[in-house]
Image (cartoon, rainbow, N blue to C red):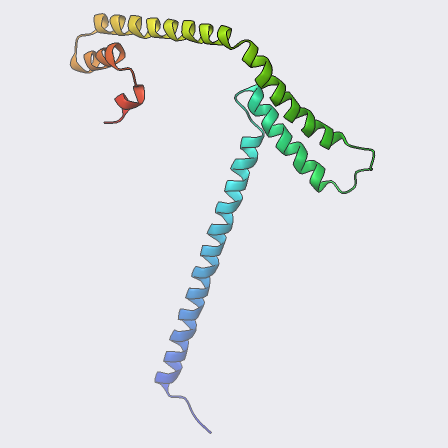
Length: 157
């Protein structure tokens, strides 16, 4: 019959506490990883549910409809709503490209006109800002508006 010494019991307790702490750290790391994956999926889902143009909306809707068609096993053979919707979105994107190409010259002219208007606004704001205050901070902003072509470059300091 072997009796454990106080030192042996202490070391066993220390080992147990260490193993428990290590197990808890592993569980915490696994949970953090699971949350990051979940957040990433949620961000992707949010991205699919929003768009900045009709082209992007058509693209995203095709993905959503394809997914629904794949996951909805209860569909009747004759019910092709989701499949048809996804195909319609893809076709609309092809048509969009073709129709847009026929109007590209007009788009380019309007884009150039809009850019010129935006440039005029920027220059007018620069002049008005410089006239309102001549302190260095104001002058720096007015000069940037007047001379900088790349606002991202201006922000990189």
